[in-house]
Image (cartoon, rainbow, N blue to C red; front, side):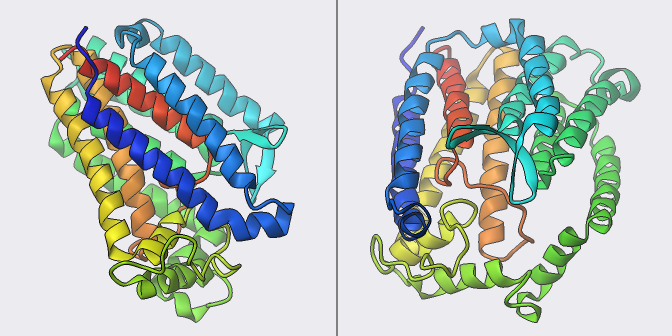
Length: 358
């Protein structure tokens, strides 16, 4: 094996370290008020970062073909965890998505995103001859994806479910499925999203608040308005590290979904540029690795991980600047959340291993 892609490794470590710094900056006021410890979230995220980087390094040494052999087992574990969390999970903010372990929480849906990429990559590799046969090649994996989406929606976690479904569809596209099929899937998907919105009143409120957040500034439009108040004054260089005003109980739990707002406020356009550049480097280098990979399973694996990562980041940034309704999706590498950070770094470890073979 060759050496791993060092520039990709450095970009991952830098953005992750910056994420921990911003978790502390954005959460210190809230943590001191709630736990009497301004370092509460920093300590937790720091531990997960150390564990994640160590795991990423070891995973980068494990031949990626191992995941092909154990894809069904990995998928099975994820499936069982998604069922168990509905009965044994801890409810947070109206969503039963976590297993509570002391002060930590483990989110099975994060593991399932990676498991689904591995499973779909193996499926596409094994069925490359039948991939243009909709009934034989495409319908089975789509039904499996919809089953997983249904389990995630029972929590409910709409944002994670959408990322998983879109990631699988992207892999099918890369696998060579006819474009006309995707048009049909798109139309069905739009109808399904409309149905899900109508079935849950809170989702309809989010849509209405997105169209005009000032119609309910203290209710459904509160988060978007406060996010824009954080981004707007940042200017070119921002107010400096720790200088955010919106983290003083204006923007709810700014260390999670809206951490990018605090980055914009404290580091201005320069901070936005740096974070965006790091994401672009990671995505560009990963796609380059996928294109060079001669192993078809490895190619699908890297594309799937990269697309889910890029789509999740784009979804979060679009919410923060008010382009789309609030989805509850975190920003990879940066937002507070141990499960998300661990799985993201493990996923990057897989890509780094593929880079050793190209």
